Length: 396
Image (cartoon, rainbow, N blue to C red; front, side, top):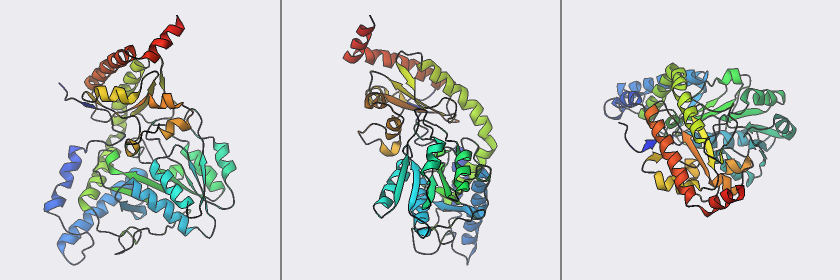
């Protein structure tokens, strides 16, 4: 029998794989040297472990280890990337293009730069959640220095046409950045095949530890340069000063290695479970999928249950199922999801949405339980809803 509550909030964070934890443990109390200490064996051992992890992360995304900078997570990597590019290429221009459905780490960083003189274009999305490539190209001007488009959305799982975006960026000689936090480790991501110049990722999204992430910066064709945002010590080739989190980095490396080896198996396990859950819940009247069904992550599904507030559903059943209505980074906000609003949903439908995120640890028994609980729960709460009663009356 599985343990309750069933955890289906894997877009917010995943469980750290036990094999990752096992690999990390010696670096807390046995191999505990500072990786920057070059004068003794403790530092050498820590440095070697970091070097191996750098190779493992690079291999996962098709990069070289010299192109990987370790950070505290994707948010720091995003700030370093966008602010660093804005300062480095200020002589060319001040225009940044991004998308209205980006994670708040990107949107808020761009808003911060707007106050400092940057010109920001926030591209709209279609009802599918995808951008219009022609609108992207039309937005480019001679002073455009960066295009930042999320690889896969954290709320809907929608995957943007990354290769086509990079081709447009290359055509206009603009640096292309992608926040790939939700995609890396879940689906194949190769920076060279896709033409990505800057990429951000975070370990806890693919079975690694929290508090560690990485920034990929292309070294050739084109060579990308950034201005450091943290000073002091010159760590990480001068781009990210501060003592390295060796246990976390080791864990990120191990998680990367496991994802390379097991990604296809994970997809084959997760996808049928996601589809089983989604298809069962879509049988409920006035229930809708948000975002394209074709171009999305295999572990994500976002549904709106009309005439029902998702918060009420979550509060009623959160002892049985762990879910969210959107990004964990904005869960304290009472505002409707900016992602779903950008896709054209009304406030009511955005408030009625739930995100289901599966993982390599999700079982069919848990999905069956979730289906039964959700079907019964939606029917029960709608039975108490005056709005639902009025809707049903309008059909008779």
